[in-house]
Image (cartoon, rainbow, N blue to C red):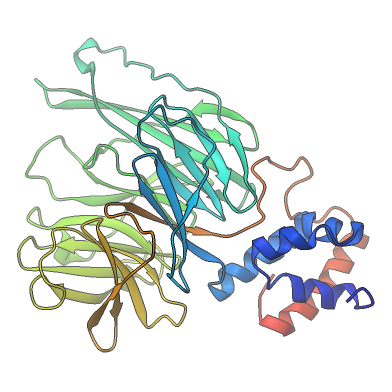
Length: 391
């Protein structure tokens, strides 16, 4: 393979899993240079996203994390995470392009790529209490982690909400950590009430999403607010009219790169909706509906996790205790049995990637001079023909 043109070698290597690529780095200095280059890392990532390859399911139980291949779902492999757990649980705050954001009971936070076993611990961030002493109760604290493609930056958002139980008023503090700037900074407040105290923001379409209400009252219907990771503004996401009902409990998720909503009609059924075109209300469509007893038996909680590689099935989490495949055409479920899977878990989708946990000074994946740009264009044209990827 040493005599192969660089374009052909790149095309072959970008299809390999990270574990294989790490081993291939030791073959020669030229292979090491290629695999470690920002261009190849970007290419490998885009190929994985375009072909739904190198996707893993991260399972968390207390202080333990496990990784399972989505394609095979055959065995859970325990991961050695980098944070001290102090005999308490580890939380996964989100995942983006192969990076996991994790935290412990001491509120140490790290960006971690489990595929290449690299991590970065973030600067500690205390909570600033609001000036209004009536709002001394911290009602909720939520995080969201994602990638800002416009600035090639990984960001962590922390929302702290304080409530005044007497007046039913609330105030929020929103801070954003930028990996590129390596600092926390305060941004605009979120003028909505978080419905779930420790629910992570869902990443989709370059934004984070939470379920909220406009007021601190029980009879308010739930809605979705988004935080754009590029302009760092909050916006409401339009919902189907039928979900604007206080009797319906909703949860926001992501399927593919689309926003999804799980609508729980309590003891009757669960509907799963998908927004085909981001922020376009008319693009919502019901992907499937499951009657509680009719299809999968008794369950209290359902969460869609990911499409199968064929797109014909959806992996569901039931009661944080089991995984099932739901066949969209046949409307049937199939139990998933994974060797070593914990009996109670939280699940997160993570991509296997070579993405570093330190921001590149030169700009990750950017073109820096005309000669390099022309050379990369030739490779892009060649590789696009190979796996039809728009770079």
